[in-house]
Structures are given as structure tokens and as C-alpha cells.
Length: 359
Ligand code: SF4
Ligand code: SF4
Image (cartoon, rainbow, N blue to C red; front, side, top):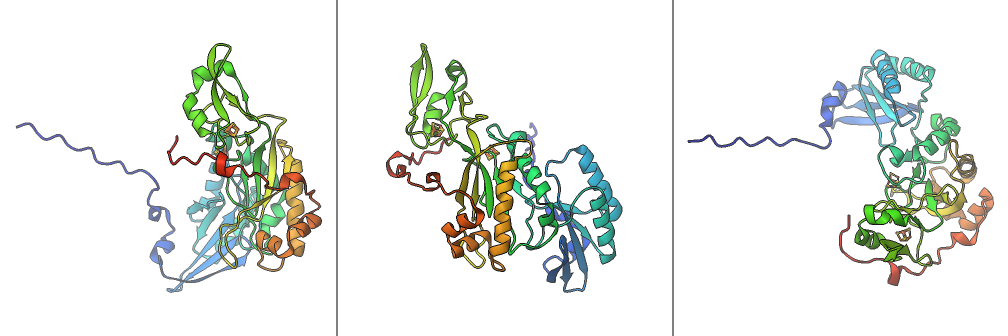
């Protein structure tokens, strides 16, 4: 009788088991921690019920690390640490140590190599950014570049804990997808409808998918120069950019008309007040690489005023709610324009409310 074919064992994918990478003291005391504190900015101490202590040093990185940086950092961690490191969701590195004696030499080695230690407590912690050019096909700016430029400027706020509360800043390289909420958020803002390259549409785009993608039904199939193409009703278009990913000939990125916008007051936490959506405070800011000075100046101004005016433990959104938006614009000297008023009333009859899942 023929042997039954052997089943291929399943290949486990997804997140690997984190225990294999943990510091031995963490595994030993798992679930049995008594308390933790912060002896200085950038350093955490966790004390277990057994009396064991584990020290964590948080180091800021330039986020996108090449082989040179990774090897340099790993060498330092092996030499001055114990070889255990993890990354936070904001791409800080956290290095675990079993004794207080090792903390200062590790900090010195990191500082000597140009890496700051901080990002804990009431600091401006590392800015989170969306994936950008490395992993995505639709960015309108280099979000990681904005982060690097801004964090260079905010270095002191990262290594100190001088803010009224923790400040989370986010950046996003398109205005529809994976950008997050932030105390301060810097997001791309397209200001003109897409320009269509009609020669390419028929070869590259699946027209029904593109038509279905538009949230305000502004795209229609059309014949142009005898070829099947698309047209956009520019009065309806809200310049969201959603048609560009399924159809790159719907070119919406534009060196002149793709701008940055700054939003303020978002938070996901429900400590002391409910989670909040951020609100637009500055629009039409030049998308100006490599240092984005205009966006950086506005963020620094908002942080300066927040630091001076907010009460202890107020997040940026709580502070603005207390003083009111008119006062916020007065204090930050940002111009309040007609573009800040959300007077779009099209959602009921224009937004695509179909329950179909589209890809
Ligand atoms: S924010 Fe938009 S462009 Fe940037 S990585 Fe996310 S989906 Fe892509
Ligand atoms: S998907 Fe967005 S950018 Fe494209 S036509 Fe519709 S509203 Fe305009």
C-alpha cells in the first residue's frame, strides 16, 4: 500500500516569541514586579518582589538604521550592556541592564557615539512617522526626514523632562492612510485635484476600482483621444489622494501644491480626559526638504507656548480645551483663516457609503 503523503508542517509567521529575547532577570521575575521609577531622564528602574532590579536605558535613534549604525550600536550594547535590547513603537532603543553600575558607562558610550538618552516621562519623546519611501508607493513627502530634522531641533526636549506632560508628535506622508493622532501632527496636504496622464490610464489602471475608490464620487470613466481613460469633477474633488495608489497616472503629488499641515491636540490616552481628535491649526506650509524649516518653526513655537502656559499634567489637547482655541491662536500667533473652518456638508449625500470591501 502506498504510504500516505506527509503533511507539510505549518510555517509559523508573525511576531516571534518575545521570551527568547528577554533579559534573564525579566523572565525570572515575569509577572512579579513590585514597582518602577525613573531615577533620571532616559533611565527606568524596575524592582521585582524578589528584590531583583533591572535597569533600562532608553536611547533615541535616527530611526532608519543602516548596517553601519546597527553594527556600531550592537557593539556598544555588547561592550557596555549585556546584549539585550528592544525597540519601542517610536523606534527608541531600550537596553536592559542588571546593575546600576553599568548605567552611566553605557550612557557615556552612547552619547560619545552621538546617540541621546531620554524620551521618558514628560519629555518630547521620539516622533513617530509613517513608512514613507522605503515601504510605500504613495508618499507625498519623506516623513522620516521630517522626523530627523525636527528631532535634531528638539534634542534638548528629548533628553530633559521639562514639558507639562508627555508630548507625542507624529508625521504622515499622505493624508488618508496610516498617519496617526498626535499632540502635534505634521501631515501632508494635497491642495489640487490629480492631473491625469491619459496615455497611461488604459495600460496601468483598473478603471472601476479607481472610480470606486473616490470617497466623493468625483471620478468618471471617459474616452480621451480615442482611448479609455478617466475624468475628475474638480468641484467635487476633496484632494484626498485616494485615487493615486490604485492608479499612479492620477498624479496628485506636486512640488508646488502638495503642502504640509499641522494638527494639534490629539491623543489616544483616556487618562484624566477622553481620547481626542487633533484639529487643524496651520495649513499650506511648504513641503521643504531636507530640513523643513517652516514646519519646524511652527512646531517649536507651539511647544514653547505649551510649556509656558499649560498646567502640570495637561496634555496639549487638555490645555487647548481649557484656554479655548481663540486664545491658542493668540498665544501661538498662528493666523486663523477661513481654511480652519470645517464647513463641508457633503458627507450625507456625497460620501461613498457602500458596505462593499474594496482593495
Ligand atoms: S501615510 Fe500614506 S504614504 Fe505614508 S506610508 Fe502610510 S499609506 Fe504610505
Ligand atoms: S479620490 Fe480623492 S483626490 Fe481622487 S478624485 Fe476623488 S476626491 Fe479627488
